[in-house]
Length: 366
Image (cartoon, rainbow, N blue to C red; front, side):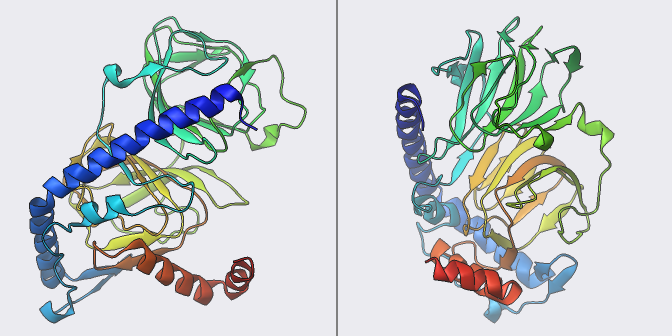
């Protein structure tokens, strides 16, 4: 159970998140004309190039095959931003790269002075959250453990963890209750910190919790030691796209990966998943019609299950850090303005075809 301080923190950050989502919805409404023009250009490409129906499969389309152009003021992101996620889930988040002024002291027990955070997204029900965690020069986090599963990806700066030095590109998945040695920042350092099963927490300790599952620990001192693969975790290979799998949960199917997109990569389709996707642009330029912007290093997105993602492109190439929050079948469609209820119906139908026993069991549970 969350402590009183954690409940207070979750409520305050949920309020801030709701305000950010409301501002994003208002901004999307003001951009309706641009969204409509971008959708028109996307539809023109579908007729010219065809629809990317699956990796390596492009289906030709005639003008009469296109969905209707969204009405004025009902652009893709304007509609999507107003959609409610599942009860207690995270809403759609599309946050541009920010700077040090956006961080605040982490007002939770255990975290020392010199550690600041910017909450990128938050699940109000459980307190699970993704943060940009900034260690000031000289800040020290003593040996200890978290009550939540934790993923750490070092974005900038350098730290020492125990006797080892870590540079950007270091990755850790730390199951809850597993202890880590002291972390020291000889210079300012920035992490992407994702607390997957509860609110951010820290407790000084010299050992693991008795029930901790240390065998699930993933420690990659540098992602440079990993080879790029054409696909990972059962995904189909796709031209112009390479993957480094950092971690896969064997039970839930959740996975964290690096994705490299070649220059001129484009996917002219709207991808819908039956699990949420989290994305941070690490480098290059990443364009997505849904957010009507050019993704640059530091841009962050949370896309709930059954919400459209795309079409997108990487004109000069891009490097992305992505987390898929469970086993997710991807279904591609044409219309960026389709509502999440329709996407959910399509996902259920796809699950019935792919795994009928699982679909029947889920239907029995309601």
